[in-house]
Image (cartoon, rainbow, N blue to C red; front, side):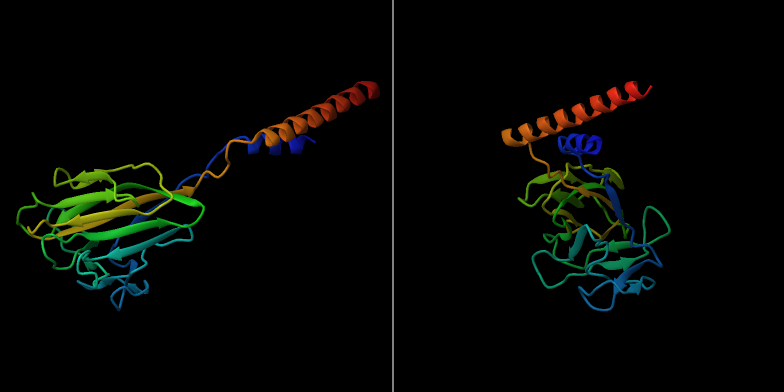
Length: 227
């Protein structure tokens, strides 16, 4: 009976599991690359302009996909690079050469039963040209703008709400120089699935609590008699 009571109490709480962080690092030596545009992740990144795997970062809870040129629609993989202007070391993912109005995308789609929040990212420019027109955005499945930033900082904390639909990270150079992104973090957690109990469910739970209480009182009486 005690276990029944505990189970009923747990059913009243619409809780979620602890969030798990996924980080796209693109570092040298990371198995993040592929031999074919949009191919599955299967190679260590060691050589400039290797293709980033089309599923790099995907887990059993989250599907990650890429679109390197949103309007062209034929280029999927971003490119691996170690070239940095502001900092040194590690690897990053850069966009392909594309018209100024094209943005690259990384799409984070939680699998059924999960939800995702976009946490943060870093970026770097790859040439000495201006980065004043660089574009960084995060949008939800309805194309609602959740976050927008420029070159004010090379690190941006985003921390969106959690969504059961995909979140899309977009970035582009605005026609000026070249831009790469790194350390892209998202959190994935189990979506809340317990709804507000119906009246019949409340009645069942109250009855369960009553049975559990009676069993506990009976156990106490037996304990007193035995004493």
